[in-house]
Image (cartoon, rainbow, N blue to C red; front, side, top):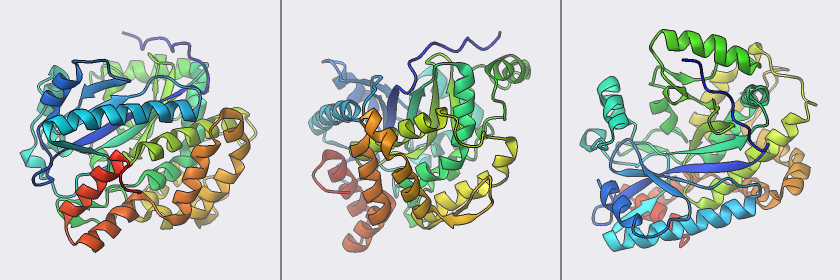
Length: 375
């Protein structure tokens, strides 16, 4: 069966998905609370959409489709407040962060949905180790060809989003020395990494995907865990490398940055992407995961090495006219301050040093999500 046609979508519209942690307020470990929380949330209208995730200690929330940063942020804040109120009734803390700092994967329970059970049977212990938490951003594309162009033109900016969203320094009670350790778990899956290089939707859908489907390895786009993947049913591309930030303000800002970058790239003033751009891709991505803003990346065209922090700040300045045109200036300013003063990974490490416990880190993450503590 051929891949479905690429849906018509308004260019540069955007939406956000956030995977969130459910925390027991007694010991700050993860809690198998998603069935109860989802049942409670069904009793009244929800400002976005909320769904289960792989294990019962996590949920995913989805925004509506938006055109402006301010409207997305307002909805995410409304979603957050609704979740916090429901969590309080169940004595469950809700927070962001790409990993829980000390949960043990073997203790997690796979959610009862058929797809989650199927993935558990296929991937074994990796399914429970997938109790990690990411932000996905969708960008509307006018055509499948625009989607494939953006998907590959964004390759050089992927480290920016890894570093700016990094919030997973601790795993299994230990500082990993990575700012984003979450992505190491994603990379374990066989269909992760980057999409094959083609700028033509027909070639992607009718040649590449058709061949992959014949192998019986994949049935739909859901089976690909690529860093960026097309979503033809929505008419979007989906950026998947971000850790879930500690605040919805950071999440909205990241979406505004991606929207501005896509507007810039669609002007076609940059040198177009070629497959050789990916020669430096994996190492640049590693630098962002390992060192965050302190990483060094190699430009895919010139091979010049530069500070990731400076590259981000320079690009944010370059995107300022696009941010102004799109109503996203406040989001870009938010990320400028983050790049100068430190990411959420830095914040979590500072809380660990100050409070001396991983439980204190989780408490700080819960307070940050509630808007009670600045992160």
